[in-house]
Image (cartoon, rainbow, N blue to C red; front, side, top):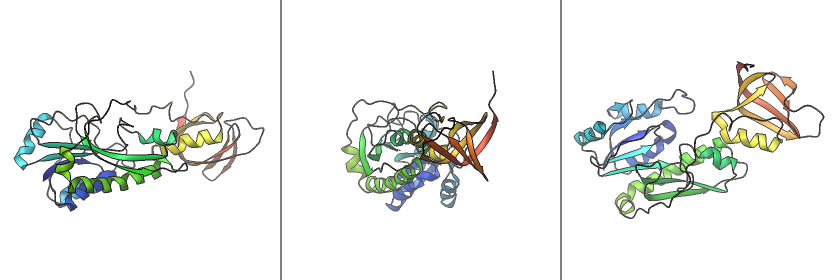
Length: 281
């Protein structure tokens, strides 16, 4: 099979699994992110350059799909892409997407946050046919795995990357059978992307609730109001302890560590950056 693909570095393992199974890549579509820490693409670009593949950094349009026929392309493999892809059916035989949830649960652009917040005991990744509605296409295969109550966003992210490799290998080696026997999805809830309110720490809450928010966002960082400053927090620790401090007050500082009172204990901000004073109205 000859295939075009979309990818970022965290999901490059999917594309490598297809190549290892004998598929031939013909073109890369990718969109560099403003935040290279979260969505790096350097390894993906190197993968394409080393193979002499054409690279497109603009959103896919219908004429791009039509042009894939010039490469003798059989399929489009989507593994991380921020923009809606036009109808591919007039131009390609196959198009599939790898989604980071066990569909039909977790339809939406980034379901991992909610998986941690809601303490799911199992999670998974899904390969489905590309359909007009996001993440709604017939399912070829799913790879599930256990989630521990102590798992954080960043642990889940790694588990997803590893599961995606296993799933991609299965799909690549059994593609015709899985495509022909794909199972339609039942209607399901669409999980929206988060907003600032979802990721803002409330120090009047309990320690466990605060840490759950921080653990859910991980590398995406949460927001906190510390002494009138808006700070972005990458990592926080916490413990319960009876005290008489006012929640939200900084009670201890050491190097770059700030300890802030919560309702039933303390939160230590160990990795954070300030975005300046919060405007007063």
